[in-house]
Amino acid sequence: MALSSIASKPNLSLRFGCKSMNCSCSAKSAQLDRPQLNNNILRNGKIIMQPTLALFSFPYAGPWRKEMTNSHIDLAQDIAKEEGILWKLWLENEEEQTAGGVYLFEDSQSADQYCDKHKQRMLAMGYRDIEIRTFSINVSLSRITNADPEMLKRITPVFA
Image 1 (cartoon, rainbow, N blue to C red):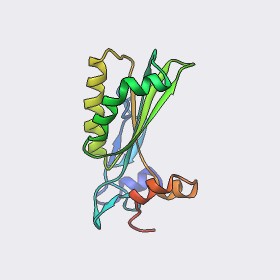
Image 2: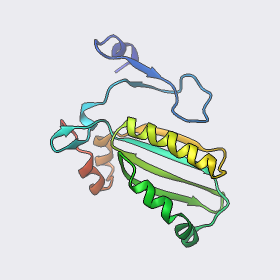
Image 3: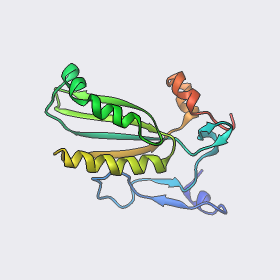
Image 4: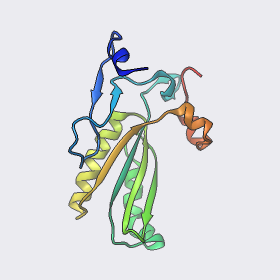
């Protein structure tokens, strides 16, 4: 569907812009200002919101692997208690001296609140050049391409 035909529909509005904290663009993407019904999370039969993925990436000098695990266990336990977070994947690339995380949130509001909080926490810890991007999830296509079945149980399309 073309953007012009979406914009002409009643009760729809378009939001332009990039969600990256470091981005200076004014219009990288366009998305509907409402959740897509086929990608909502259901909890106890109630629609929550559109699941949102956040991607953090930043320069990191180590420690790596087991030492990273040992030094970040308290942070991991704190993140696990965050409101609206479903899971986090920890990322590390020693060769490129980069680390980050992929987070899945129940909705965009939880993702936005967490991203703001975590960016401030990381800045206070001395990290710089933090790149943060958020994405909505197309559950239908993710199912076709073998996304984790356990994750998909938590992200249930309303209309299949």
